[in-house]
Image 1 (tube, chains in turn cyan, green):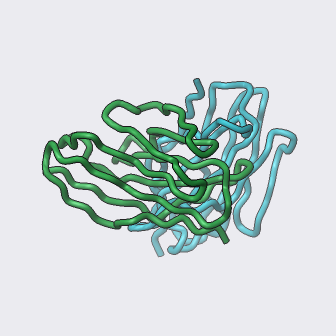
Image 2 (tube, one colour):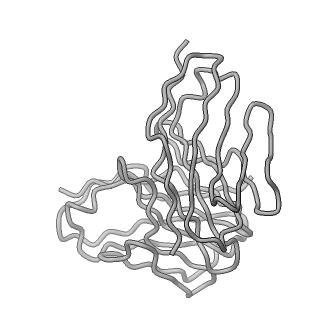
Length: 113
Length: 110
């Protein structure tokens, strides 16, 4: 089955710096790659996703890149703010009926002002 | 927006008790999931369902069962709770990839 590795497990940056979180996946059939943000005491919230027919997607300060050949994808946050501090999870799936997201172990991002 | 609700935010049970965790979604989603979240281990899939009365085992189904009698409701059952089932339990639903999560139930088994 699918296996997703996520690095780093913790990341500390200064406000205004960029943050990059990287994930690799094992199943070449996976074609859907979402990123979730989880704030303390809440469930994970989808922040951006990318499908395998796209190499990059951007939404304001957040961008995701996908390299299908190397089977890795990354989350980029620019101009970080203290409210970006949270746990971020990457996930992968085949995105067809009867399949589920498989998650990485998470990255705790701390943005200090 | 999809709303996924879980019956309890916090739950404390005794070892050996039968525990029911209830989840309801309001967007007519076909797929529903139960994940368990533990520090350093991320989100691990327990069971999921892609249709009423259908269920599939995830990565860690041992000690759990599920029930989906109606499309909007997916229940996780701990037949005989054990201390190693103390965890955060997250329910989710999806239609075509995009998966929405509930707020979670923090279960403590004493």
